[in-house]
Image (cartoon, rainbow, N blue to C red):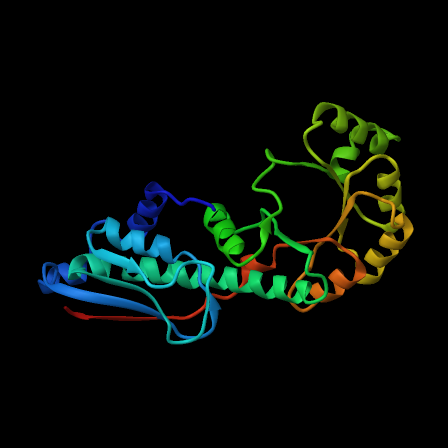
Length: 279
């Protein structure tokens, strides 16, 4: 689970309420008692309801989760409930609503890709990349993981992935030499090699790659790599680039064990209905 701490949540609050709520304060409503509910307007995989509750708590309201992150709900289901001074409720309203709507869009997209792929191969893994909107990585990865996906890389520090851009600096035999060096210097890590065509994939496997990342291969070329490697190859094949809920089943059927995708990061938000009124 990706933990989003109070410092990060306070930054979201300050972005929207840098000097208090001028309208609420000017109307003299700040100290009145009120209640707030949030409900799903339609089907969604819920994400960041816990963080939304914490935003309201940080502003001084009492708030409770009705639906935890990761649950799939239909329209009308309550997501959270809060009560407290109107100033706290109105200050946290849009920050919390926007967070749930945006994160639930990512989570719902991830859920759809996972469901499409696993309808063909229940063992397939859907891994989301680090290509999230800048500044949102922790929240984005939290959303896609509650949606059923896993994380491809949180950043450059956590995995070994050999690109053509690395090989450009290695000379004529860079592929084999760099794979050998990575296996020697990072023995606790799998060596993943990104390849651009079938021949390069087979060469990388022969040179010792443990995972082949097939960049923008159509499903039929993924199937060609699987066939070329044969049943005795002990590595894994990851298909990457352009994978969505519409084509995930085709990639799973072609034999890719991992589907690497950035698609959830551009998913539209899901709609959340908010009611605020007197306590």
